[in-house]
Length: 327
Image (cartoon, rainbow, N blue to C red):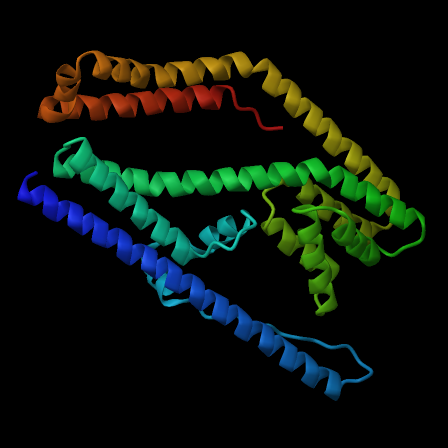
């Protein structure tokens, strides 16, 4: 093995160790900061209760300062507020520092595979590594957001009907929110519990629901918040309004399933056409490895491969947009 490859492999390994260590230290720092925040809330609550035994207790929670890795990631990650909102929509404790660490790990791993395994030139490997490092974490976050939103929408009509039954039995809207948080499973339950806790700490119900809508990537929940806001201003039968909303959400789900069934053939064609070049390359590699490796050793072949990957990506993206419908 050439000395340059040994040095490069050692550098990539050291980068992995440093990044993983930084990620573990950041998780430990966040854990300690969370405990300090909880203790601060408890102490302030005790003081407020002692000072206002008969009044409303208002507790202000200060934002926990970010860890060193999170502050370092904030310097180079673009659109910090949008990124934090996107990470919050996953329902998991993912900080910008962890996301930035994942990006760096993907870049280092992709660069190592491109140089050591595929024997790509350094500029081509660096370009592909940056593209993979930016795209793979974004794709993982998008999948987590989509799966959580799908689980929320699947349970949300039942939650609305639970609220409707509570309203018809005479409960106020705030108590029905508490009932949904206690009775429904996650992610619906956890979001309604957070909303109920925010109301207890002095926030209005409408503001708490709008804050929850920013953590849920589902338009159905925004419909729900808008319905409550309109009913609060104009009046009317809230139970009937929410019952109609639950029926509309179920009809939207049925329509979405019909569209998926009708477009399944086109989506299967897109998957097959997108995977076909890679399958053929694998077959050629098994039958004649030296001939296939020319694609990585010849600079002209590397340029052709890059152009081909870009064209395949554009074709798959176009077919994906053609069979994707928003309801």
